[in-house]
Structure formats: structure tokens, C-alpha cells
Length: 203
Image 1: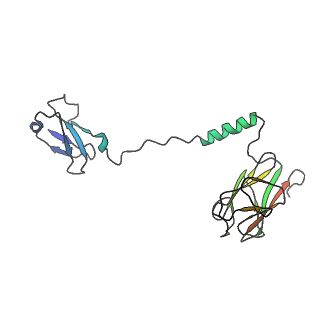
Image 2: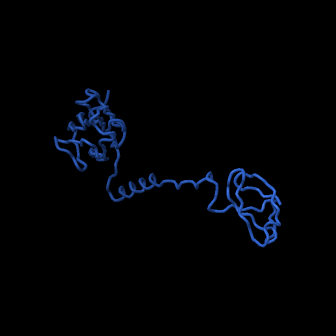
Image 3: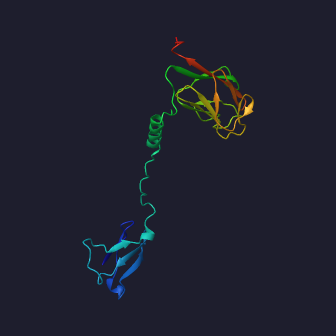
């Protein structure tokens, strides 16, 4: 009889009389060393193919493709959460129309620069985020600014090494900032600037 390895498809001859009274025998492929089981042709009707082998579940090839990951439902869940908050009269996070939010660098490597905030959430960090400080005293991801639909701005520390200071005190929970209020991350001090573009249009 001809036996074919289910892993590498290698074929080799085997004398089926060597099965004796055994219902099946295990083989180790001489080419790829895959272990598989071959049914005694005298014990069961032959399948349509000439190969009578079946792989052992515990010895499946390592390159067997894994099932595709389950798609994350984070986006849908967030959208559903925002809809629920809106229906309850509670506003979620978002940039309100008619307002322009900026950060002015007062001290640090980026002093005298002004950064316009483009989204409702802004990460400030040494290497990551929308606002890069290039300040070795700030953490890679240092602080988070959140702009709410009512125009309020909140700052949170992202478990930074040197902390985030508002009014000279290290914050441990989200703190609301007002326009022209200063805060410090490492050696970089910022001022929040909020402009009403309806009352003071941009040129």
C-alpha cells in the first residue's frame, strides 16, 4: 500500500500485512518527522483517496493557520455609549463649534511655540502624542487634555514620572482648566488658550 504524510505529502510504500491484527499504526514521516496514524485497510473500508492516513490532533503541523481574531467592538461600544449619554442629556467628549483651543509653550525645548488642538483628546508627551515636548523631564506619554462639548477643558496625568502640575500642585485626578491657565509637565510649562471664533473671527 502507499502511505502519504498529511503534513508534507511525501509518499512511501508499506507492506499492509505488517498491520497484523492491529486496527492502526503510527508512522513518523522520514522526510518531515510528522507523526500520523494509518488505519489498517483490513479493518475499515478504504476511502476514495489512495491515502489511508489521518493526522493525530495533538501533532498537527505548527504552520496550521490560527482562527481569525474576533473584531474589536470598541468603536461601536463608544458610539453606543455616546448615544446613550446624549439621550440622557449628558454630553460626551467633543469639540464645540465656534471655539478654538491652543497650547502655548512658555518654557522648555519648544518655548514660544503654539500648538492648535485638533481633536477632543490630546496626549502630551516626550515622544508620543499630538503635542511632542522634546523635554527629557516629561514622560513618553505624560498628560491627556480632554475638550468637552460644553467648552470645558480637563487635564489628567498619565502616570508620568515627574507628574503634572496645575497651580503648582501635582494632580492625581482630572482637573478643569480655564483659558490662559498654566500647567507644567516636566520642565515644560504650557498656557491653555481658548478663543471664541464667532466673537473674534480668525483672519
